[in-house]
Image (cartoon, rainbow, N blue to C red; front, side):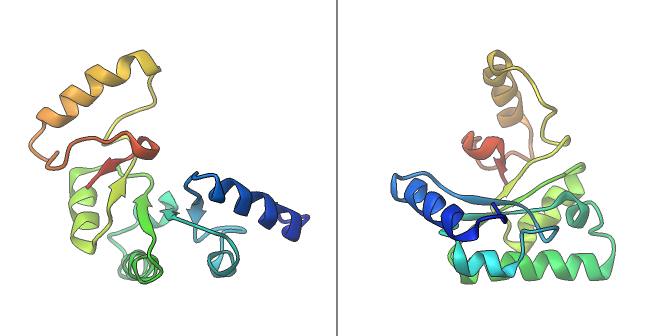
Length: 140
């Protein structure tokens, strides 16, 4: 995408106009920078797991909180990647993060196992919001 930015922007804009939601994956690393938020018709940020897994660090927490706040100010939803514990899930929810994904929620599985996993997830005490299947992330 970075080799021909103008052509890529045109293609992504057309895809968005067709009704598809656009996410920036691994936000905060590599090419997924703040400049992309101005250029692309983005609906959602996915915070990279490297920030989420280090929430016990004051600086990392500040980055996650600021990213969630920035996304919300821009009208975007947020998915936190790499959620490994109930504590992390709870903290992200307290920061206002709408969606989470990671091994705490579930490991990769074949599509035919998804209904059983969803039923088990809903039965857990921490699953206050029903599973929607959106981005295979679970609302927090």
